[in-house]
Amino acid sequence: MRQKLVAGNWKMHLSTDEARDLARSIVESIDNTTPEVLLCPSFTLISAIKDEVEDSPVFLGAQNLFWEPKGAFTGEISAEMILDAGCTHVIIGHSERRQYFGETDASVQRKTATALQAGLIPIVCVGETLEEREEGQTSVVINRQVSGALERFKPEDIRKLVIAYEPVWAIGTGRTATPETAQEVHQLIRAWLIDHSGKEIAETVRILYGGSVKPDNAETLFSQVDIDGGLVGGASLKAEAFSAIIKAAR
Image: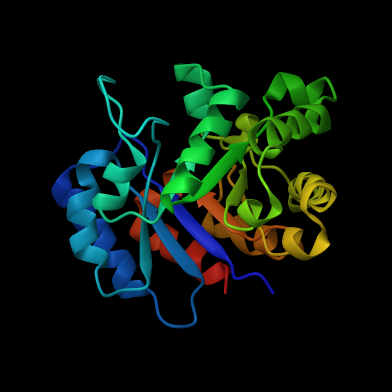
């Protein structure tokens, strides 16, 4: 059985003191029965959060990376820098990166390759917009994004990564896909993995749901057969809410 993973994407939020307090509260709330927990703060907070999660089961991740190891790339950060800061995971291709910063399936593929080569665990994000869903294009969009990001990788590389389905129409809007709707897309992604890498490897890959996960919907979402946890945004900024989501994933 795949172990659940609950990841908190803090996006561009929190001062150092606020972040320390939040991380400390989350660490204090978990025990050996909880799923894997991952915190992804902004780059300036990684060092402070590393101190708070040290000697705990909480993992640390970054929200983005660049595919080059070094060079004149002002404002970017490399995989090696992320590793050096203490991270084990990195989010790649989040819908906000695609929407505001022009990321494409091709750039997601390059970043994923860089992360894997460096030994980071990529969380590769895919998801359709409201317009695409209303036009009945969900399966086309998801298959295109997954293929564009992952088709060049060998099965042994696919085994090392995580995929996050984040319906763009449900992020920050208060709207959430029903558990059944979310499961349909997760099943579609799992089917792609089976076709690409075989059933044995496909069954080991965790697929997270990332569309407005909250304490009151987490348990029903996580009970779906192909939903292996959550990539949590707003609710991860509140210790009580995030802890409740973690407990729902037991």
